[in-house]
Image (cartoon, rainbow, N blue to C red):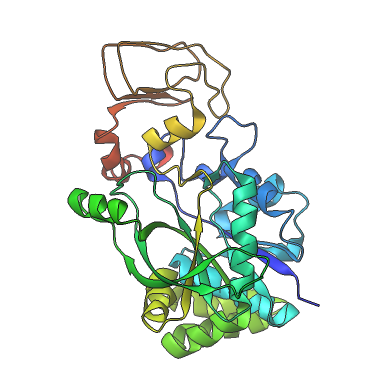
Length: 365
């Protein structure tokens, strides 16, 4: 009998490109940005709960742990891993894998960001079923998102030959990952899109805990040793002392660089193509697209529904809090009102909002 599947939800980052809707105290994963009635974290957990028969672990910053537990009241106390400070995705996912491995042995796990949108949950479950099967064959597996346009804002995965399944198997096609590529310029993105060989890298990984830890020991031995020492103390009274001693000096590196890229070069990474209405909701235009509310009524976090009017302003995004907002003749406008600030920009300029947020007083960040 196959072991259970465990979902790991890294819930970090400040979502700065969606300021002021996403703030340091309430980053986008803790917020209902899309008007669904649930926060993005709650939507992610609801999507994973039917498939994670082993359970879920949320890895988040210590400052957000209490709010994570409040938003997911069914989550056990031992299912939240609080980080004293962010050390990038490899530390978060690696610690979760090490804790799961000690608790349950060599089990299948998947890592899924807390602040992404997936419209077609049936397609997601089908791709995940295939990914788990491939992971149990020893691969580090990633879900490659079928591109819908020549986007420059995402990393890409180049696929090679089909490697699974055997004829008659009850799961979909799995391909070798030839390489992981950084965000391309526009001409390169167009060539990727035209070739049909490239998929967006959504950062979703499925793997056996033992495979991940063995690869980490081989490729990042110091980080492996540090995470393993923390995991060994995690379910004991020594957790706080050990984590406080080791965590500040942990290597800060993304799982893509630590494992995915070097393992792909060795033929040990597999890709499951997925067409499931995915968005990372990384900026205001993607939020406009997933919420479907350009210039219509919108409920902002903590606010009441207000009717805004947008005329002769194509592709505008408007989010009201206390008053109706009227926009006339401003294409690609971004107008966001919250309880304490009004933000006005354009879609292009809003891409550089991080620099502005860095200069704001602490009470506005």
